[in-house]
Length: 467
Ligand SMILES: Cc1cc2nc3c(=O)[nH]c(=O)nc-3n(C[C@H](O)[C@H](O)[C@H](O)COP(=O)(O)OP(=O)(O)OC[C@H]3O[C@@H](n4cnc5c(N)ncnc54)[C@H](O)[C@@H]3O)c2cc1C
Image (tube, rainbow, N blue to C red):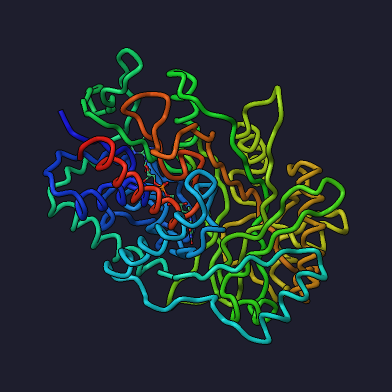
């Protein structure tokens, strides 16, 4: 019997354990279950092969200690306005207080003290003025950039700290289900080589990230965990030359812009901007290949990439937003023979596919080498495509050259935010003993906010459950 089982060793899960160990005076038996590997054993073969080999059973980019964070760009957004809807639940001021607190923990474990995107001056005024003229909103958000390789070292420091403090960590182990008795969560069922094993605990925290979104959806349906359908974002990863993005890269590092283009006025936003970065591929368990991006602290490319995401919130009777986005992704993968598709913006406007030989003679050379030139419009829903095109035109007023014919659009760029698990300000679900955190709970969508939710969970376990 454990005091606490945490499923998922992403930022949400590990900061729950970290806060408990740092703040509670009582000893605890804590088990951390993670289907991926320890952080030092996470290696993506693509570094050597140059192409994604679709690793089974787990992808080192998104699973393992530190979750999707370790191999990510490691950009910590230091404003409550970015990273999910947790502030709606706990209040904006408290969310900001927790971000400032959690940021200090990241600094203690080795984060770069430099904060980007706090520039005040004529350049930022000019960018904001252009954004206003284009009908876009520029969100202020200071960023602490860990960098992919430094993030791994930082999370290794945290992993060692947890191990030294006695947290049991079960790697390469997948949680198959939760165990309920009279609507109270009593533990988890783990899948092991030769069958399953039930492990009991007083409290269970599920923090399985975006990859665990469809698993949690099934769990919600099976056990009547109160939830509502979440948002899904469907979009593209845009790549253009650093020269085009120079000003916004220098002044803001990451320019977060939001717009509501006609005719539907859906929310469209930029996300995860990587100056001098690389476009990357992520694979989900069901073989879905989606595009993402990251940047190294030292190694730089000639390009900047960022996502343009169109938010989809469906109304009754439809309640399967994740399945909808997956279908879009599958169709795109089918057209690319399992690879990410890439198309020039100008070709989209001209109504033609892009050919590999055309890519080879443009200024923007794709940094995702195994992306296949093709036609993303053959798989992208009309509404999402029009939103993206209109948004790119608006962006061009802020960043001249953004709508250049040779700007590259990669697809599918999908963000599944899980069903939003209903919970109160103490992070209690309708099932006693069960808590859902981080990206899998639908309340966060970023490293910092997921970490913050973990910190809050640690505190609530102490306040409400005698830890
Ligand atoms: C390539 C990439 C780049 C990114 N860049 C940034 C960035 O720069 N800034 C930013 O703020 N965010 C970024 N993100 C998003 C960020 O990584 C996530 O928002 C964050 O990691 C969410 O934390 P989490 O703890 O909720 O989940 P995760 O980090 O996803 O961790 C969940 C963990 O649970 C494990 N798991 C899942 N299901 C099970 C199961 N059934 N049993 C056992 N274990 C399970 C997974 O293996 C995983 O390790 C990026 C994501 C990716 C993929």
